[in-house]
Image (cartoon, rainbow, N blue to C red):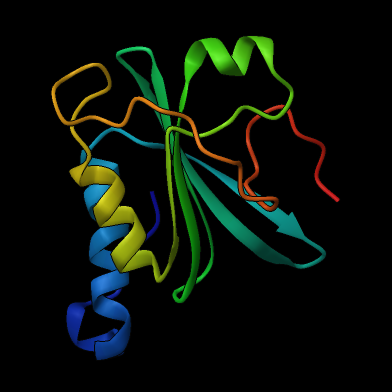
Length: 127
């Protein structure tokens, strides 16, 4: 694991976004870095639990997309419809995703909605 900069070395506007990513690590998300030539294009976090996959894609601090899909929809659909999704700043969408009730519990989203066109899910070909 890399060396983390001291809090004083981090720009104040970036701290809530990094805190949201740290919260996703504590929530047992796994990560994929989507590479671009000589750089990271985006970071994707995902976790599977209770029959659902929660995921987020962060292209920058203010360009993130999060979603929850049923695992069974991942198995049978190339483009699974999400049960929930949000777009915005990393700090906002990751914390909203982490705040969702567990799949299948009271208050958890149950009805699918249309899939955002730029939601990348494992197995999709990157363009």
